[in-house]
Amino acid sequence: MTAIYKTDKGKVRKQNEDSGGIFTNKLGETLAVIADGMGGHNAGEVASQIAVNSLEEQWAAVDNAMTPEQAGNWFLKNVEAVNQKILTRAQENMEYDGMGTTLVAAICTDLFATVVNIGDSRCYVMNEAGFKQLTEDHSLINELIKTGQISREEAELHPRKNVLMKALGTEQAIDMDITTITFEQGDKIFLCSDGLTNKVSESEIETVLKNAHPLNEKVEILINLANQNGGEDNISVAVVEHGSCIESRCEEC
Image (cartoon, rainbow, N blue to C red; front, side, top):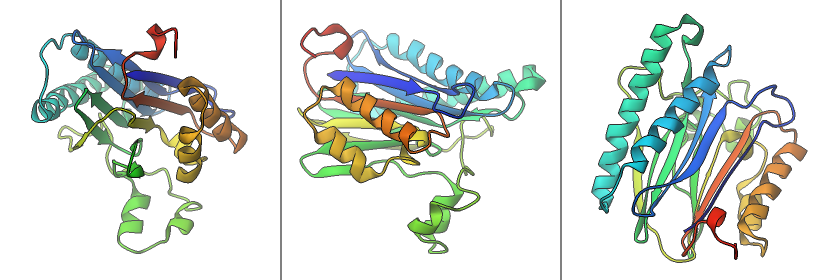
């Protein structure tokens, strides 16, 4: 696998409440994670870091090859544990009351990719069939679009664009979406926070991913585009390409 994660606080926010990373277990399999935190007094950053750090720790201990079903169950167990950790931290410290985070993460193996999401951070796949969004936004705007109350064009300027219907760490019971797809050589799994998708169109993302630049340069181009278009939010991107190396360890990447 070739994989890279980058984050940027954008041009307006004073701090970066996104967290994420690319993590490898004992088998050399890849977990990509992005969490977009929310809440005042740095609480969003705390929630997103709890999510990412917890999943990183649990993934490092995995030493058996998973089936798609086992990967889905791994997410069910560990994301639920993350939810409880965030709730407990908020209960122990009033400053963190009401904090939460989106979560999108992908387990990538030689045969399949299993994706979990809560909130409006997204996962896409690029393969022979094209560029496709795998996740569904858990947002008020998406519900209004699905029910035909507003168009996608109207959604761009809607005053409640950032209202989430689901987030990690805000309720005792958490309902997550889990999807598994075939993952083959040359395919790309693309994760991002809404700081990117609110400023860069899907067609622009697809165009950049198809160009001949190295993977790290593609990610930088996309982050720069989001900043050029306003950069009002934190911007995070993770890409995993089916291949034979991890970018941070390969001199050829």
